[in-house]
Image (cartoon, rainbow over all chains, first blue to last red):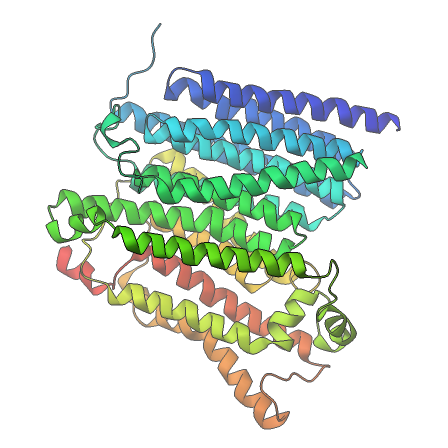
Length: 99
Length: 100
Length: 321
């Protein structure tokens, strides 16, 4: 294992932790609005860390570009959908959670 | 290294399975949709890991298609399938009543 | 050794998950929940195809199974709900209808027999069957492409693909023949964020469709995958309320719909007259001919899948607005 390999392992593990946190958030948070955080924050960071980890292993710059593009697209979709769902939920009278 | 990639993919698949509880539980349609959206992101990560593990670069194209189409179902939900009025905050009457 | 173990665990989990999701999405009485479960099923199915080393199918499943079908079912559910609230009793009762018990048992027995038979066939197979892959490999040179899947679909067994295109067209005709029964869906004006998302995604989808079409010659990809990605662009535009003008909906749409099958049929006739066999391409032109066929097929597939989202025939618009 080279230094790059160690870096990949560390980044991938960090990414996995964020994915785990995202799932815990999805299961444990009390309402739609708080669960949106799991979708937009945790998983996108998790995927980002994994993309960086795999990009330093990639065989060509084209592969690196494709990995980054995939991450950007997922973030774009995640952020937009989070906004749309939150907006729709508010308009349908779903109350945000309070203690 | 290959084992490590596969093990991580397995771990992500397990988190996806755990997230399935939210789809079953709800309570609102938006919660179920969010869970599906989360599965999409997880599946992208799994595909990228499998691509690295197997050395098959074509799997990144599958991940790309996933990433592009992730928004389409969510947009269909927000624009069409989400019931306009509430009546979904509580929906205990339509539990597994007539499974057969 | 551990790699095999982990791969085996991954595959078993995937297989069990697929079975469970299929069961749940069929058995669940809440239609929306069933749709979400079906989307999850599509995601796992694409992963299963990846594990079976069939990235071509995985691509198609990712685009159609996890993406378009989910959206199509959601739109269908919305139509169903609007019919129910409009008090159409005849349609509402369809949902309530139950199967008769004995029929269910018969079905269960028949399906179990079939599953046992399939299981037996799979187990009794030798571990490695060369099948026709060596035949494909030896003739790959003459096919004009280097991706064996594309070579089979467009060259060696082109008539299969021709008929698949016709099936897709028939599906659309089926939907069109239902037209008029469903009231036109009123779409709320799209939020600004959605507008912006669409502006970014639609060019990306078109570009990706072109990329998949091109890459299909030497790697996983091709007309069906590209066509469904192209359709996603159309579906997004339809979902945010950007309907094409009525003038485009009449003749131009129909022309695009039949462009793919028509090119295929024309090519079949020409090759039959010149080469003496159905869809037998001269090796020196095969690459270009396949690209032409795939491009027209992609346009037709994209238009057909997007047109499915419009539902019934267009003349209902005039009656309702």
